[in-house]
Amino acid sequence: MLPPSYSSVPSANSLYNSSSFYLLHRSPRASTSRFFRVLNCSFSSTGESASDYQSSEPQNRRGNFAGVCLEDTVEISSVKSRIDSWISSRIPGISRARVQSSIKSGLVSVNGRIIDKVSHVIRAGDKVNCTIKELQPLRAEPEDIPLDIVYEDESVLVVNKPAHMVVHPAPGNANGTLVNGILHHCSLPMVALTNSKVLSETDDISDDESDIFSSTQGSMEEVTSNICEVSVRPGIVHRLDKGTSGLLVVAKDEHSHAHLSEQFKLHTINRIYLSLTCGVPSLNSGRIEVPIGRDLSNRIRMAAVPSPNSSRQARHAASRYRVVEVLAGGGSALVEWRLETGRTHQIRAHAKYLGIPLLGDEVYGGTRNMALSLLRTRSHSSFHGDLSQLVSKLQRPCLHAFTLGFKHPHTGENMQFSCPPPADFTEVLSQLRSIGIEKPLKK
Image (cartoon, rainbow, N blue to C red; front, side, top):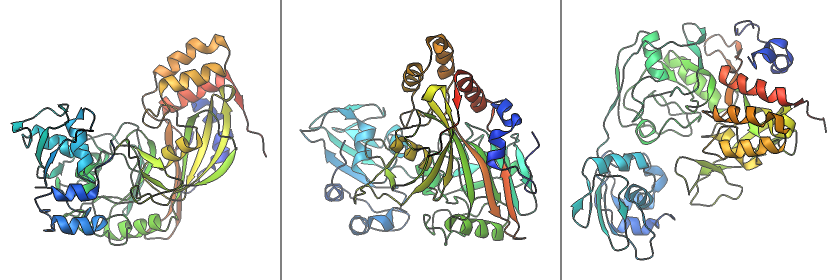
């Protein structure tokens, strides 16, 4: 296969049908009012009081929670639960990782005794005291990490991110990230990342259209003006989940960052993803316009919310999909996705909503057991042994950012890049094809 090039990139259809691509196949949350009755400290980053937070929660989500105190008694009706989970449910907007850090630092006590074990089980009547730990600045150091550079000029960098690589530093992932590698590639110095809710409050789970490093974020709909105190180049304009492979564009100067950010905001970026799904959608193509919000039962998961309510804070999300191939007798499918918006886990949440979770997506229902059960019921018994081996090798959701197109921020030229899926994806695809492959019927 020819190396990707913005000047001459084959269409998605031609790549699907080409022999080269074929061979590549080489606890319910406590009420807000109760939380604020026991909140004693102010937000250190903004100076806002608990009453301020109560009256305007969306505005104050930018607070970093440092110094927030929780004093509460576990209700008699409560079931036994881990202390980190229970505290997280009492402080809206905080991550469990942040709570766990506070516990390990000795800032949590139960019935007057300091608890440093995050899995400590609390019981009805326990009196819990918690102070949220101050955020520690994250430092991104240049690291000599091999990068698959698809295209580079003075203004932009297009990278083919491998699966399992985190895009930016975060607690627990301070090194080995794409940002570390790009800092080295561009010969930039070490930087400190401070006061960033995105960096310090979440894992790398987002493909949202939001930059996490630039100080020029005013035009972005999702980021606040104080999200980061330092300006870092290169600028990550968008992100991919840790388990997602594929194309990502990086801005190398202020103008490029602002211009690309605006394109993402206006949804003019062309993005095509490929996935392998558990099962086949009932329609061979369609458009899903279902809002996405945080899953109230699982803090690391998003959910498609057909009828959003105030507690979900779901946001508009729209995806288009098309079945490219029906695989293994209908046990799986190669599906193309085109994003109109870029919400966190958008494809994964919409695929789950359609009843076709991505193969290998343990968070959204595409578990090994589910995949194996579905594939076995659709295939001859002679394939069952191979299917067991195939499913056991799944280490990530089978999702790849296949095509990325944008207008060059300086020249105005339409740039388009495509990269085939990596070996782990194509190996699974090849094995599923060997069991059975059909082109979807046009309806």
